[in-house]
Image (cartoon, rainbow over all chains, first blue to last red; front, side, top):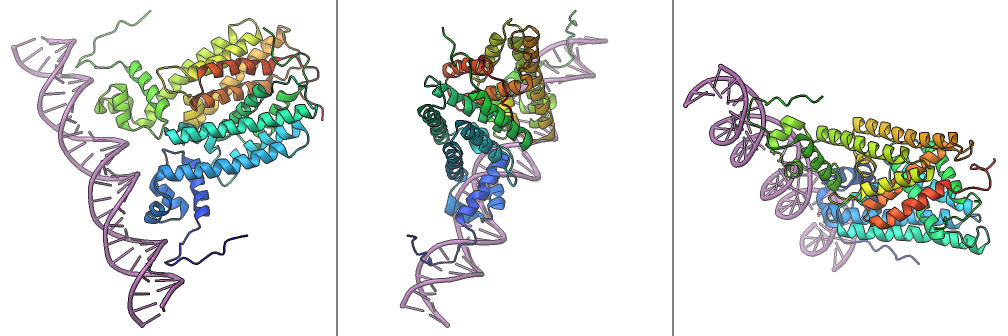
Amino acid sequence: MFQKAVKPRGRPRSFDENDALEQATRVFRAKGYDGVTIDDLVAGMGVGRPSLYAVFGDKRTIFLRVLRAYAEAKGARAAKALLSPSTLRDSLVGFLREAVESATAEGSAPGCLLVCVAPLVNDAEVRQFLQDAVAGGLALVERRFRDAISAGEIPSDFPAVARASQVLDLSRGLTVRAQMGMPRETLLKDAEEAADLVLLPRRGNATPEG
Amino acid sequence: MFQKAVKPRGRPRSFDENDALEQATRVFRAKGYDGVTIDDLVAGMGVGRPSLYAVFGDKRTIFLRVLRAYAEAKGARAAKALLSPSTLRDSLVGFLREAVESATAEGSAPGCLLVCVAPLVNDAEVRQFLQDAVAGGLALVERRFRDAISAGEIPSDFPAVARASQVLDLSRGLTVRAQMGMPRETLLKDAEEAADLVLLPRRGNATPEG
DNA sequence: AGCTTTTTGAAACATTTGGTTCGAAATTCC
DNA sequence: GGAATTTCGAACCAAATGTTTCAAAAAGCT
């Protein structure tokens, strides 16, 4: 199953590549993109300067790798929170709570690479990646709504697309507030209320006529 | 009413102070805070380097001035959009549309100093200002909800505080998407739908029992 | 042990950046 | 017109930053 780790020829590395990337994530979350210097990365990742360039490339390349890993991990957690629970409300609460918990995880600066940092990076590849990631998140929530429609949990005319957009906007709002330093407890409470906002039974249609 | 403009003694300035600040706003919106160099400001504001330091101070000071002016202008527009219309729905739509229009105004980079740029600035004074600005915005929306309760437009048990938080979160989400490059038309449509989300008549209570 | 391979730490280098200095320019006051 | 006052543009300086070079170190291979 696993490839036997063949010992490489030369001097062994003094750092673990994935671990270093994780630390780079912390650095970028704490200082944004432009605020990070190579020295910050050298100090934060525990990797010497020449090794850093040799193994990871320049700042832009490192950020892209960090961003991809971050988005993958966060996407996996979001998908799990969203698709595991049997009720739609639990899914939405879990999704929004996950966003808050990730944005207020201790050991890292508050905020989110995808919501708060990457959108400010003026780079075509980053922008493209972001757009794809956003579309992916949207599709995930939409899918959960459609599953709930199939299960008869919400009416078949439930505006899944619009509501999915709103759920993501609410999670972005929570994340921005986390970045601003709002305490986790407050945000977790608001996350639950936000889920209820999207779901509470309505008297009329979800979209007003005309 | 207006103070007669007494001609100052020396060589006249080659720039207008407020105009220069407005251009500085554009620079910060386009490049964030850390991404902006003094040269960017010199080039963008049309002010020579020594004059810039003499008149405005260093980057941090300039940013704080820009931020205050920006927040005041944006707050005024938000208050007008929120408090002028007679129906609550028009107020909310106007408020959210204002956020989108401001975040997608042409001539400036998409995004918002208060939502996308300032939260990343690692400075105590900026953070404090942000918190106050956020509290102000929240109070404004809450007040509008309470007025609507007084007017009998929504039931007296309408959860004004929670809904106000959600309206602001939705506007932040729209703003972040603007920063990501999403087109204005899409966001304006979503702004209307977001207003409806908050307001549509409900069958049960707004908060679920225990 | 000696050779090869790879990583490492320190230093070196060029460029960018934040901030200041200084003489020239433009204006008012006498 | 000339002195006083303020601003402007160019150049300057020191510190920070991005990137590379190089010899020494640490491992495997024979």
